[in-house]
Length: 168
Image 1: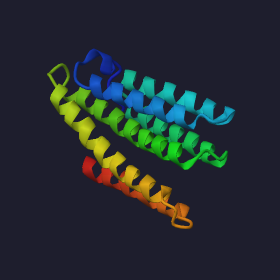
Image 2: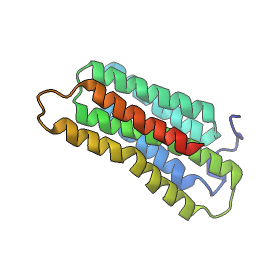
Image 3: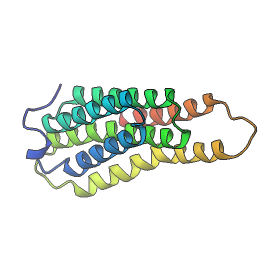
């Protein structure tokens, strides 16, 4: 289901979470726009995210997340440093999660007050995703000789898996 054409803007529920989704997506874009192709992919993805929020479309929100991830891959391929890439990955995951939550809230709660629920969701999800990323970056920044890039991928995969599991 792609949601109603009315969008999140017509419901009071989901506005805070939708705004957080937009900010997280924009943060990821800024952190990974290191060359022309990555920047173009990022601009298209952020516009897609904003359209998804405006139209309450889960499909467009997912495509925006995929696009932002593509921008991350392009930035990594062009040699961007690990710290900004990890922060961008957190932003991408949060953006996708918040966009879906905003759409769900707008459709199910409508105009009912949802501020406390949204703030609790934002705080909890951010802690679940950013916590492992901070731990990973601290481990990565310690001079162990060489930390394999697979460690970065596995921790990120774990954060995504945990977020997906908590959604069910």
